[in-house]
Length: 136
Image (cartoon, rainbow, N blue to C red; front, side, top):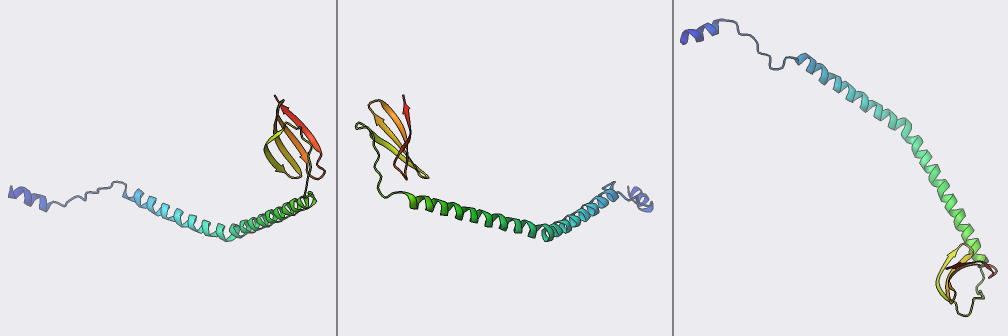
C-alpha cells in the first residue's frame, strides 16, 4: 500500500479543473460588468439631457391648468353674481319638492305631485321654468 502511495507521488498530478468552461464564465462576468457600466452611463446622460425638458413641460402644463382653473372660477363667480337674491317659482299646489340641485345657472327640482314624479329645470336668472319632465 505504501508503494502505491509512493507511485502516485512520483507521477505528475493532473490538474483537476472543477469548472470546465472557466474562460467562458470569466468572459460572461466581464461582459455583464461592461453592460452594467454602459447602462449606468446611459442613465446619467438621459437624466442630464431629457430630465430638464420633461420638468419644463410639466411646469408649463401645471401653469396652463392653473390658469384654466382660475378662468373657470372667475366664470362661475360671474354667473353667481347674476343670480337673484330671491326667486319665485310657480309650482302646482300639490307639489312636494323631494330634491334640488344647482347646475350653473339652472336649478333642477325633483317634485312629487298627484300625477307622479316630475323633474323641473328652472333658469335661475329669470325664474322661468325651461323644461318639465314627467316620470310615469
